[in-house]
Image (cartoon, rainbow, N blue to C red; front, side):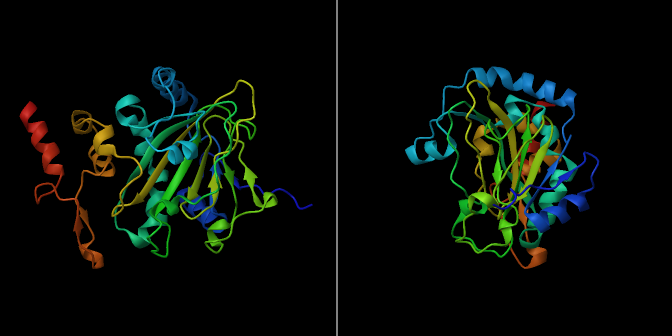
Length: 286
């Protein structure tokens, strides 16, 4: 029997170049100590009341609910619900990773999702998938998205740790992994898995009796895509107006401009830059 594969782990002070190189070779990389303990304490405290009030997955689609997990609590709209998330949204290495991977097909990136995924006891494993598959009709020749899974508590494989097939970003589209080709991620609180949109992965099964796997998924996609999370409806406009300019852009409030690469413009607001809408709101309150 072959040895179970493992993802390469990098220290908290690793460089962006290190992250990009390892993910290019293996499809993903684990960064230990990415989030500081004081941030985890603050962020988890902001999340606790929202998760306590959560009443289960109900997307309106039985197939979608099954994929998302019937024993899993998920939260979006984090910039409004848990303001500390904005620090993750603007993390320089995560943004740099996204720009390096997605940049060949898109001059701009936007937030695909900022989502807390809290997997409860008894949850089954997800089907293996690539995040790029959300846009199944697009075949741009490079990843359309990068994602990260940050551990907000100590996460073991038994709690539903993410399953990853290292090297699968180089496989033919139809190939799925054999059991001995899958790495089950152990993520101490504060560590994070960074991976490309063409890497095969899945949320694992939580086989524990009483432990929940709380993690944060933060992904960025090409600016010309419709993201998984609808930030326009999830985050009130008054909250968006109070965010840093770069955060507003990442939430989709910037005109997509690909003119320098032979493309066009997307996302007009009344045939103008959506940022003007935010600026007018700021002026009205002065």
